[in-house]
Length: 449
Ligand code: GDP
Image 1: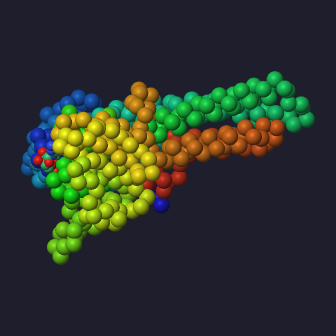
Image 2: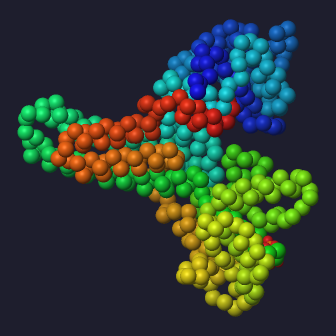
Image 3: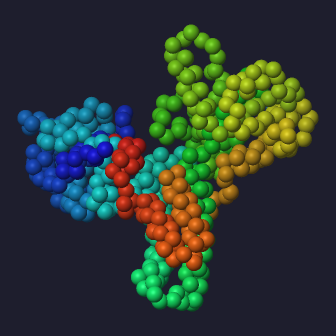
């Protein structure tokens, strides 16, 4: 699929829908002189806030605001960019956007500003993805991690791996070019050593990226249990001091199905099964269908029971309806009433945690179980916000290098595996990336970014 035309002037409301103090319309294109002069009466000075009246075709004021002009190439997209800051009302911003369209712009597609930034070499693909991940970050740890990708730290790591690979390839391909010459034992040892160092570095990068991807997507937890067993109390306890950051999951605003809490910065997206029942109500039916969809994608079932009663037939009935592939954790709550001791067990009867949401005893054990199921070790400063696409590429690199290690004596095969490995690395930063993949990546951005 070909991308949208790169020569159009594009415009979009860059701020969120709704009421706000300020709203921004962003415009980008090869030249914005005419648009600026008709809308503002003149082009604002470069990178200087200018108080301006935004005017309609007949000269009527649409809004009073601030205009900022970033001439190419020193702008977000690498083209001329105009930022119009007006009052943050939905109607006034739509009027301003419509005026820009009248002046020749078209509405930007999601992520199109960033796509242009990528096309104009302002950032690479992994950095562009970092931008989307920063906007979507559900926890502070995820945001910090995405920012590191956006600032190019992940790309730098990938490039340093690519550099090591290129040095190794140079060494090996030199011997391909002169096949009659004996491969020097020294060169061979050198190549082996470099290869093993590179494999270690790639392995470490995969591990760091995997931690980042845990922060990005978190754990999808299905919450089940009868009324009054303490589900809400437990969620509040788990979220602890971070309750204020309870958010809706990115991309699904107004999603009543899930709420997100965080444990050590790892998002836990909680899907509540409380509303699952037979009903004739149309709206409720839609909600229930969405809950089932969310459950299909989940990782873990958290069944909460009253420790005094244990698992009831009603619990078993709901658990039976859940997909079998889900990891299951049974929580025996209210041990302060049952007199049980806090503990976590994991044996043939499955994972069980005994705790009290009221006193907090045993809560840490449950936190640890959930973090472990998410695949989380602990936050260190060198985690990267890797996406599935990056991890797959890095794993392919690791695979190619492993095969290379097994073929060190067959120089041609060795060189071929190294070539494959390099292509995978380059795909992460987008050096050679197919248009349809780009389309897919940028389509998930918000409009105006
Ligand atoms: P839900 O209906 O499953 O969400 O249950 P709630 O969280 O609303 O809790 C139901 C009742 O049980 C409330 O009165 C809670 O205060 C109480 N409760 C929850 N957890 C505990 C616990 O660990 N110990 C005791 N003693 N009471 C609890």
